[in-house]
Length: 101
Image (cartoon, rainbow, N blue to C red; front, side, top):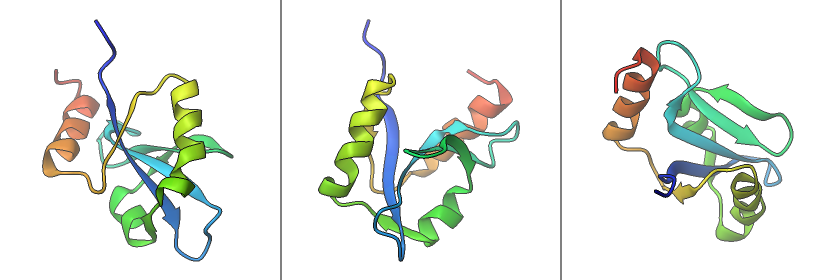
């Protein structure tokens, strides 16, 4: 059976076109599910406030996103790029944080 895809948003901080990052809206980064997992070339995995990151960034272009997507695939992710996370994605993160299957 193949690994399921990983929903991910690839974003760029406003004012810094070289700072590309990934948000994983279904992957909790805390015990409460308030924060999601993020990833950048430098610093790699971290926690992130989804709403704050969305407000302070813009969607990456395909060209901007390509190197980060390549790196994510290399470390084992199967990214499925989204423009925005749905309520279902956020609910999945909350359930995962609570240990609910």
